[in-house]
Length: 174
Image (cartoon, rainbow, N blue to C red; front, side, top):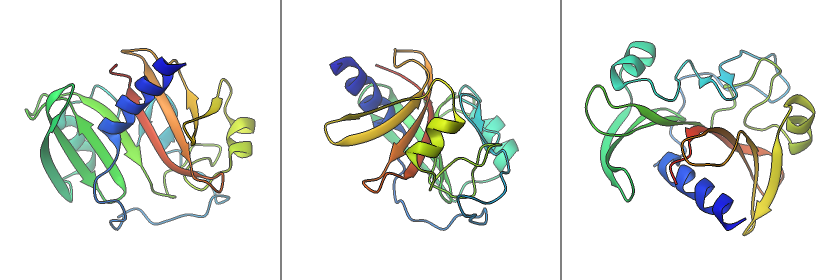
């Protein structure tokens, strides 16, 4: 079990957005509103997929509201792009650097079934097959995929009220 916590922690440490609370250019939508399909578990968020390059992300989303180069303890030099409440993390600073994680905190990003930020764990469980939910060290999360290095996962981070507060699509790096 410690490996799961370590893997998820490393993935999330890379993907956690800096400066949360920035305005989102995509209009907010209530959790029960019609789905827009911009969140595809194990696939993409707003059309951004893990493995895309910086150039491809910019072609898809345009110029970010923030573009920061940082040093990651495992990956070394990385780049973090912010598009309001969407964060894209890349492994490196070059235009060919691959996306390692995409994170949304926007209620506007929903699955075809209407799931996303604001959904309850119960709604997630009924709408997503293969979902595994657990609490480790007081942190509640529901994950699609296998928490092993190199594997793609979709993490639905839950708040203390039991609602999704953040969705991360990323590759486990440790």
